[in-house]
Image (cartoon, rainbow, N blue to C red):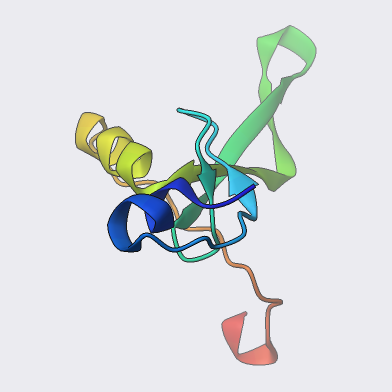
Length: 88
């Protein structure tokens, strides 16, 4: 499967690494936007307990731009590399 955006923009056949969860388009690493999706578990007395680590959502740039335009705050980018001692 090849990246739809690479084919449309540059007529390149670039292997896809993800599928957009919004539109279903195949996207390469360059066109993939990974964001954290915070999940919660319902505890006793209806309390919402956050689940760690956060889930991830993969979207193409077009769908991520649309999502960002409909929310007050842009999505939190997901870190793809491990934490270092200086990140604490």
